[in-house]
Amino acid sequence: MHSAGADPAVARTATILTLTVHRKVYRRAGSEPVEAVRDLAVTVRAGETLCLIGPSGAGKTTTLRILLGLDRDFEGALTTRPDLRIGMVFQEPRLLPWRTVEENVRLSLPRGERGQPLEALFEELGLGPWRGHYPRALSLGMARRVALARALALAPSLLVLDEPFVSLDDAAASSLRAAVFGSAASRGAAVLMVTHNVPEALAVADRLLLLSGRPASLVAEVPIRTKRAERGRDWTEAMRRDLAAQYPGTVAEG
Amino acid sequence: MALLARLGSLVLLLACWWLASRVTDPRTLPSPEAVAAFVVREAASGDLLRNIGITLWRVVASFCLAMATGAVLGIALGRSRTADRLLDTPLLVLLNTPALIVTVLAYIWLGLTETAAILAVALNKMPNVAVILREGARGLDPGLEEMAQAFRYDRRTWIRHVLLPQLEPFAVAAARSGVSLAWKIVLVVELLGRPNGVGYAISYYFQLFDVAALIGYSLVFSAVMLAVDALLLQPLDAHARRWR
Image (cartoon, rainbow over the protein chains, first blue to last red):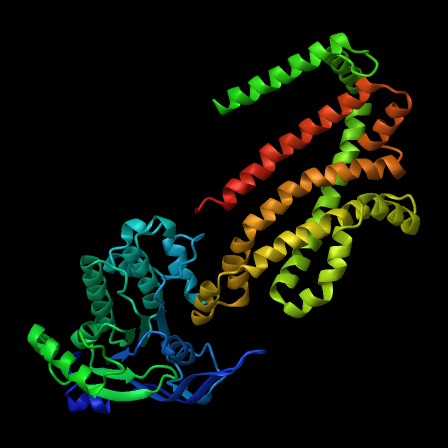
């Protein structure tokens, strides 16, 4: 079911989150107001994989903050399914360095759920031996795995990832990628990933959302109907070139 | 090895003292034996223990009071810009008021009482704690704040697992510098207005010009404070840094 951007059944599946931002302006005392986002609409459906692509510094972080409900000071509307749980994986792992790996994961849960067994989750992500360690002892790849475990512990219907594979070597990136999409697929969770790596997005996405530079606004929404298994190197390269020609402000020539 | 070096420097210091006492007037610089003899005598009479005990209690009480009020004030100043603007100047004034003035005013306003003494010491130490913890509260990691919000940390979880661990190194630093400051000020406060304690004993023996007694009391109390630092504050420091 997961590779089914073309499947009409998916188009009918429930919308779990709708965000419309007409305008988001930062106003700080003593400086000019800065418009960070304009006319941006994002809809996330259950179980789909969505990639948000845009030039760096384009207000992607602002968009994520609004989407997570952390910033309510914007013109527009955010509607979510009432029981929606969002698991967030920040670009920097943002673990509490003074708490062990296991404590970091448990603290992300509401108080009543902290005692639940997490062995299966730690084993699934290969974190079993690291449970009692402090984050300082971990490599970046491992720390991101802990951040992923923390997000997955919530049993989210939506996993939001901000540039999750940057600054990793190829091996670490591909093993983390397998962990992210494997765990999301097995849970039926939707994935919203922010990235500037177009080939990476092309490999996993059901839809691409292309953003312009500041103020960030939606340039295009590109559904990808090719099955994941059929997305070879040539296909990816052709798609990328195609997108770069159509949306030069968003997708860099390579 | 480190312990050996410490012991070595201590023995060297004692040797220098002993030599110097040979060539000077024993009334102005008594020998180490004379000081030791005084300490034994004073301990046997019970005065040593009583004076040290009462001073230690004053140090502990005023230290706890200063840490508690200073920490609350410092966190408030570090977190709220309005509070900082309002209270920065009074804090600076208090920070720069000589300990002697605070002490004398406390005695005048509250009388020569135990409360006045402890309050005077706490008031001398408190601004220092507040300034150190204000730095800590200002430097909270914004990334972790955002993470805590994204995962809907409740207030208790945030305080215990996000706020306090970030303040811990600052609190320990304030505590370690604070203990030594508190005990020095306690002596002045006792000298000016208490009928007991190490400060009182010092002023009494000063009037008798008994230098052996002065050095004896000072050394014994320093030893007590060193023990407090080594047995209480250093382990606390190590605990605060265990994850680094």
